[in-house]
Amino acid sequence: MELRNPLALLAFLLLNAVVVAADTNASDAQSLANILAPLNKVKNLVLSVAGVIAVIFLVINGVKWMFADSPQAKEEAKRGLQGAIIGLVIIAAAFPLTDYLLP
Image (cartoon, rainbow, N blue to C red; front, side, top):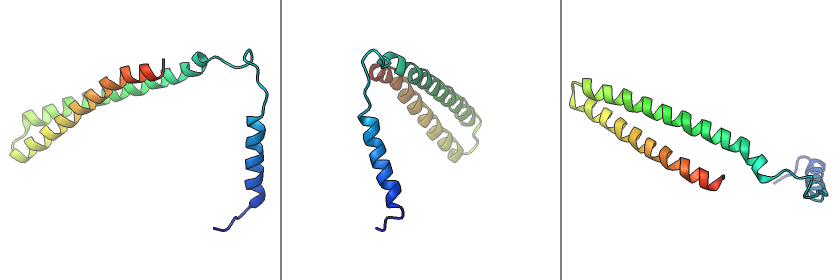
């Protein structure tokens, strides 16, 4: 493999060493709770939106299943219902799991 710009690679490696060697005091560093607060907000938003989307898919496939004329359409709607239910179970399990991992 040919290095296109060895100077850029060297600068990247040296700058990482400077960042690692930076001196920080415990009083200057933010607490873990302050760092995780935005992550928890994003997690709650993503899981809530995913739950709403799964419920919408559940309703849409339920209506398709009720009004399906052919056995193929009923089977397709049934697979959609199964997928939506599995998605809801995964999302429901993700809430306590992520609360445990990101307190």
